[in-house]
Structure formats: C-alpha cells, structure tokens
Length: 169
Image (cartoon, rainbow, N blue to C red; front, side):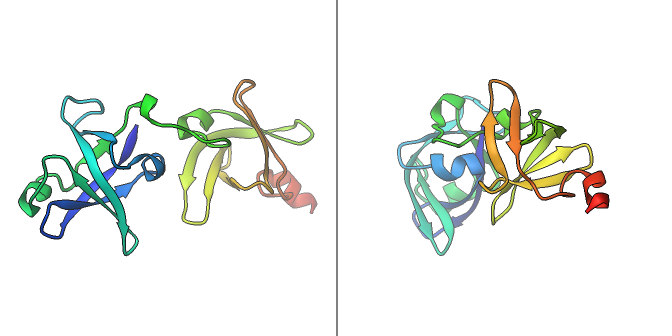
C-alpha cells in the first residue's frame, strides 16, 4: 500500500521531507519498514529511525541515510507498506474496501456505488456513480458501513445524490 512520497532533504543529517498518503499518515513512525519504488514490495527497503513534524511537514530519518547527498538520491521516490503492517482503528477503512460498495439511503433505496474515495483537508468524501455526486464521510451523512453486505447506508439531504429529489424540493 502506498504510504507516501519522499521529498527534499532537510538539514545536514540526511532527514527527508515526506508527503504521507492517508494510510501513511498514521503508519509511518519510528521502526516502520518502508519499501521503495519502482514497485511495491521491491527488495529495496529502509527502516524509519525517526519521524517528526516540523512546521507542518513530516520529517523522516532513515537508516543508512546520514547526509543531504544520500537523502537527495531518494527525493521523489514513493514509499510503500505491506498490507499486514497497516493497522486500522475502529471505523477506519482502506479506500479499496469502500470502492464498489453500494450506497443506499435509510429506506434501502439504491443511490449508486462508490467510484472513488477523495481525501480533502476537511474530510474524506465518497464519489458516487452514476453522476459523480460527493458524500462527505461524516457521521451526519454516513449511518453505517457494512463490508459483509457490501453497502453503505447514508442519510443525505435531498438532491445531493438524486437529481429527481432536487427537482421535487
């Protein structure tokens, strides 16, 4: 699973900036093993020695990377985690678990399927096909996520996902 991408060196001791993915934001920590591109689970991997926030940026110190020159060589590389290394909390889901699930309202009426999950600064959102409607993943709208029955129960304002509801309002 893609955990993020490495950026420019920071400082004199080989630290790198890192733009974590939603999965990587919680999983990249001291002791984690990250796998480097070109492909997930490639033999090339690094261990995170330290991870810290500095002025809103994640900074990583990686084992074996001790100079800005070493760090510069990793700039732009994607880092990956093995699926088994990702621990999800209660009410946390991976994007691939949600994509393809049916969206139904509280009356069990079909509204579409999850096409993609978008990660915005305020909250994550489900993009629903057909029509490309967006449902913010907040408790006010998402009433239940049931992976076993492959459905998400929503209670959304009229017109958010159904054009015919918008015309009636």
